[in-house]
Length: 346
DNA sequence: AATGTTGTCAACCGCAATTTT
DNA sequence: GAAAATTGCGGTTGACAACAT
Image (cartoon, rainbow, N blue to C red; front, side, top):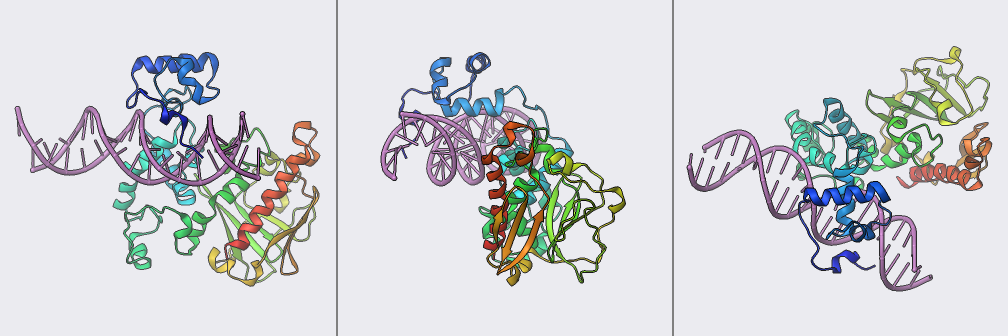
C-alpha cells in the first residue's frame, strides 16, 4: 500500500487556506460535486492535494456546518457520548448535526477535559478521579484511553469496550431499518426499559442525551415483566415505561399495548457487564440459526433466546428496495455480530 | 512595552480500511 | 488475488491570539 499519491507531487501548497482558494474549491464542488478527491485540485485549479481539499471542505466549507460556540447542551451530549464511545470523534460528530469531528476533538482537548477535571471527574474513564486513582495508581490520569480494550473490566469500561455494537444495533445506523431515522435521532429514540431473553435481563437506560444498554439479573423469575401482548414469544418479553413508538418507527412489526406498560422492576439487581459475561451462560454464544421469522442465539447447547414473530423490515417490506436477501442477511449478521461479541468479551 | 504562558483552532501526518485497477 | 489508489480517522503540530508576568 503506497503513500498517498499527492505526497509525491511537488510544489503543492500547505498551511492555511486563502479566501481565493476557498472560493475555487467552493465553486468547483458546488457546480460539479467533489467526485474523486484526488482529481479535485486539478479540476478546481488548486495547488493542493486532494486530501487537503477534502479536509477543507468537510471542516470549513460544507454548507451544513453549524458555526459558533458549542451550546451547553452540545457539550453535555459530547460528554455523554464520549463516556460511551471514547475517542471515536467521527461517531460522536455524527450525532451532533453541523459539527465536525475535528472541532469536537479540539473542544474536548482544550476545554471539556479541563472542565471535567475541575469537577473531579476523570475525562478518560468518566469516573471520580479518586476512584480512578484507587483503581489505577500507576497510570497518569492525563492519558487518554488509546484503546478501550486496554481499560480494566468495569461496568463503565464495558460500554467503552463495545459501544459500536450497541449504538450501531440499537441506533440502527448500519441496519438502516428506517430511512426516516437519522443517526442523530435514532440513538436517542430507544425506548428506555427492560427486556428479557431467556433468563437474561437487559436494560436500556436513557438520559436526556444518551442511551446506555445494560444487563441485569433478576432475583427471581416472578417479576412483573409483561409480555408483548399479541406478539407472543415465550422467551422474548419487553417492558417499558415509555409509550414511544420507537419500535414502529424502527420497522419492527410489533406494538406494546398500553395495558402492558409498567414501570421497570425495581428488584432487578444490576451487575457489571464483566461479571455477567464471566458466567458460563455466555460461553460460546452464537447465533444458531436465523431466518426472517426466527432467530436463535445458542450457548452451550441451550438457547439463550428465541426471537420469533419479529420480522425485520427487509423481509416483509412492501418496498422492493428494502426486501433484498442481502439486506436481510445484513440484519442477521449484525445480530450474530452482537451475540458473538458478547461471547468474545469473556 | 517586552516576554512568557496558555488556549484555540486549522491543518497535517501516519496509519488502517476500503475501493479500484 | 495482489497491488495501487483512495478514503477516513485520530493524534499531533504549529500559528495565532489572548492573557499574565
